[in-house]
Image (cartoon, rainbow, N blue to C red; front, top):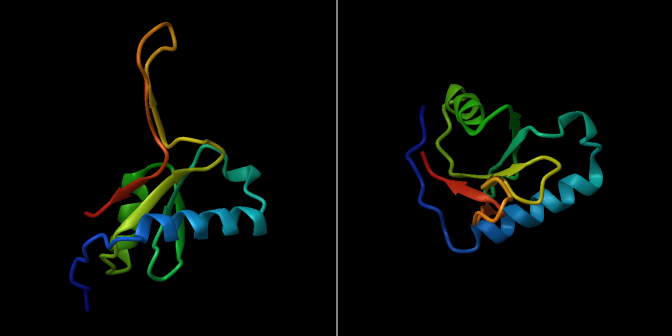
Length: 99
């Protein structure tokens, strides 16, 4: 049975960041550099894939609807925009998505 969608609760981002930091200390992620990690702050589960869409497809295939927090493995920011030639760039330290 498919779960009903949940809202992103206060504290979920901080909890997901803490879980991600602990996971990185306990696991060798060198072979996953550049991949996307999707973190479920409620269950503690972490999915890996090539993109946010890939991870959402994995989650959906399991009949889950939990909101996820995304990080890029080996990167300080999930997303960067700008050429670095005087343009203003955008950085997201982690991305929380409910789909």
